[in-house]
Image 1: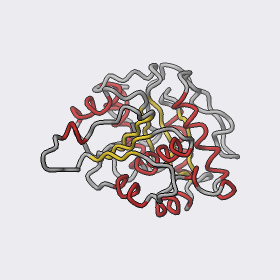
Image 2 (image 1 turned 90 degrees about the horizontal axis):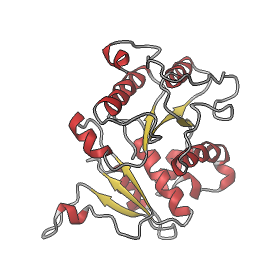
Image 3 (image 1 turned 45 degrees about the horizontal axis):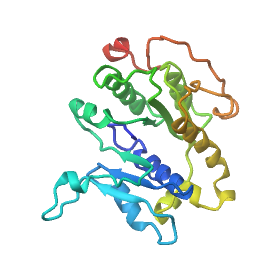
Image 4 (image 1 turned 180 degrees about the vertical axis):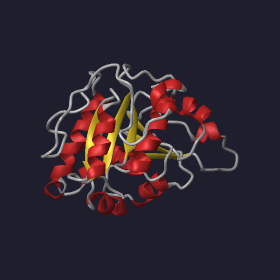
Length: 250
C-alpha cells in the first residue's frame, strides 16, 4: 500500500513502477486505484500491448448490475497487489485502508510542507491505525531527491529520527516522466538509460520481499558527500523544522 494523504508526494509514481516491476519479473500483479483522479488507471490505459499485463482495479468504476465488491475483487491468481491510495482521506478511513496491508510505503518529498505533513501521517499510522514500527510493515521512501541541498539534509535528519526503515532514496529524474508517458515502469526501459535508478529501486523491492528489518540508512543509500547516521531505538520523533504536540506524542 502506497500511502500519504498529502497530494503530490509521488504515490502514483511508486505504485505504477512497483506494478511494472513485478509484471516485468513475470509475477501476476494487480494495481488498485483508489484515487478519484484515476492517475494509475490512466497509466494502465496507456500501457502498450507488448508489455506484460497488469490487472487494473479502480474504485470509481460503475457498471450497471454489478456490485462494488464484485468490481473491487482481486482475481485468485494474482501474486502481488499494489494499492494507490487517495489524498486527503479521514483518520477513520486510515484503519480500513491499512488493516490488511502487508507493507505500507510512505513517500516523502524534500520540502518543509511535506516533512510536516509526513509527521502527522506517521503519527496517525502509529496512534490511530495502531501500526507498530517494530512489525516491519512500515517504510519511508525519500522521493524526488536532489542531493547537496539544504532541504535534502533536513529531510534526512527527519527520517533518521523516526526509527522506521527508509527503504529507498529516489532521485529527481526525467526518467519517471518518460516512462509514465509510455505506460511503462523504469524496469521496462533500456537498462543503460535507468541504471542509477534501478539501484535505488532494488533497495525498496528487497525491503518489500523480505521480513528482516533493515537499518534506516546504509552507506550505499545516501548520495556521496552526506553522512550516514545510525538509528537510535525508542527515540522521540522530531522534525528538524517543526516540533509540537504530534511530534511529542510519538
